[in-house]
Length: 349
Ligand SMILES: O=C(O)CCC(=O)C(=O)O
Ligand SMILES: [Fe+2]
Image 1: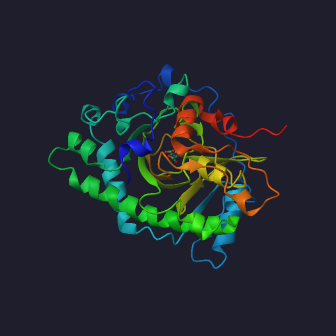
Image 2: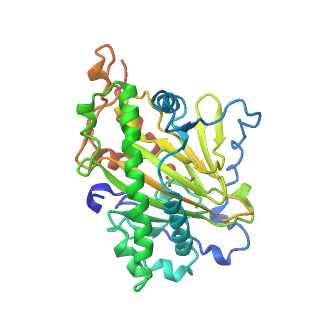
Image 3: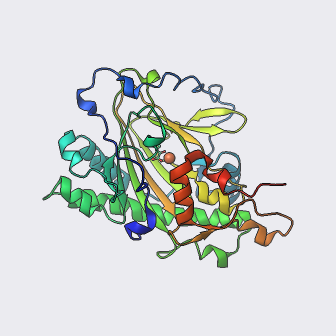
């Protein structure tokens, strides 16, 4: 991974808020009550007519299928993704070991204004009045520093599990970049600027959603898009991720054994000149199972310039976004959240 300076997931300007001590909670407190959270949570795929694509990476048509999914959904579930079962198992064990600790223990690695890594609430929390039913742990570059604060003598297995997850995730995402760039007609020469150790920054986000006494009144994570190129996500124990499809509404991403969820983020949306969606997604909670998710974000480095790559191959198409460094985009997103993409878009006269 790159240095922490070059891939902050969290902002340095927003206030730090403490997660709730879920272990002692019997009801949803006022601070965490979302009266309307479920009003728009209608299932649209109940009749099975339209479901998030499940793609086999070994399919000879994988490139077209991935391109089609990115254009229409901004997301898909992937089979034969190459992330080993043992890596996922260790990741689950270590994530659970972390979040099962008493709150005081986790607070030893609480994020601060100057350090965007470690334990805390989801980064969009300050944008909402109500709080979310979630606690998280962010890893940038290396987990060692934060893990040592929590387990001074027993941090290595946590760090090893995270490193293996990151290494295999990176390999997979670079394959997906190759296929999706090819689909978009972006040259292999250009692709070299977006892959490899010096041209990306990775981050891991571990999320825990404890059992909630009144899930219809709570929100796991509020709707947002990721700032990444691609995001890779493993949902553990229970489904709960929902993706918004234009013209149709919210879809639940079911738990499908041996698949991993992939979604496109804001940067790929911009690179593709808005041909690929940046998937709007949110998380619901439940009253039966403690849910966990383990997420890997593949992002550019802070100094990389993001601008639409497609028009270079197609002179008829006007760029829809202005060129800016990734650092500038992260700053805009930290300030304006869901308005960020429209702020950097070039308005038609
Ligand atoms: O828990 C999930 O399924 C989604 C998490 C998420 O959206 C994120 O970490 O950005
Ligand atoms: Fe997300």
